[in-house]
Image (cartoon, rainbow over all chains, first blue to last red; front, side, top):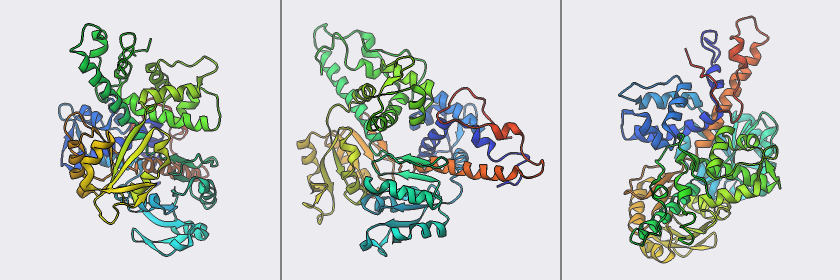
Length: 259
Length: 259
């Protein structure tokens, strides 16, 4: 890791990237991976921005932090960009994770193909239910919570996934942190307290549903307007009807305020 | 829905909101809900931006689309902002959803408390396995895929959740669309093709893990630098070491390019 640091400090690049850009890198990677699976060789910033649901000017600025500028008239090389973003996110290395709480959700996560393809290897499964101990899930024997500290000590895991019920999540979190875990992905519907230096991210499975609901609502509104076109002049002003949001647009368009 | 449209067109407000802002509204809502659960009455744009992982200037611009400007020196009213964003996303109405594929993931989703609290009501569970038919999951009897069209017709569902294996996802998607579904949340690890007018969003459960990996990588880099402080002058230039990214910052800081 320290090799060649005098010439090109390994962490400088990462430190210069704003947090909001970091949060968008996985979205670009998801869109790029879909293009890669379809063997698309290059992509324009506009196409990629639309696929990732981001404004294209922002995308170009984000990529400038990676030192990636694309080629005018050609766009970005898909495979190289997959590699660049993966490297930036640290996904070119192996990240062992431990999953605590092997109910339906924990079992679904253990079986989830999307982890392995991103460099996340499920190293251990832990559950408090003794009847699960020793039972294989996704090819890995579930171990009992009593062994938690020992498992983490021996497996060298630094990322813990909590998929327990809300009531036991904080206690599990405290034990994970005490055992040396420094990053926690929380699926339990509760807010976790952690000491400084420990990162927690909470997954809300309803986020994408909320975005769909917004569009469903808009479609319903358009249908109502469409029906209105056959109606007398009581229709709203033309400017209000023609104003549409293009996917990925986030420019300096004026805000349309409610009255 | 059409009531009072002449005075204040219902869809104008929604159409003026850029797609990227729409995608951030659920993040604000998640952070605001956490504040609300802790009975915090008001929040500054900086605090909320940090909690949502967004730049505060962007947050203020996003909220201007909602017509919400906060009060100088006081900040935003948490409860009112929860209401405003929920209304904008269409979450103040009931959204029945159907889940297809009741394996571990589908069962976990059926039991997921975060859906109900956001206005998403699980109206039906569908699986191709006849041995599951009639079995209750989360209090709802699983129905067979043969009944899919009839179920959608009778339940008035417009949002479908696909939690099947990748191999059957497209076929399920085609049937859902033919039956009138216009929004699809896809958990299957495959890219779905849909006709125009149908929205699909793909959930990648590894996205938050990728952000954690970025920070883990950075922590590892900082440890390496920390060890170096006791070492001879071979350390990297001070500018590189002191440059840090504040959570939520996304300003006009210069990009630090790799050599």
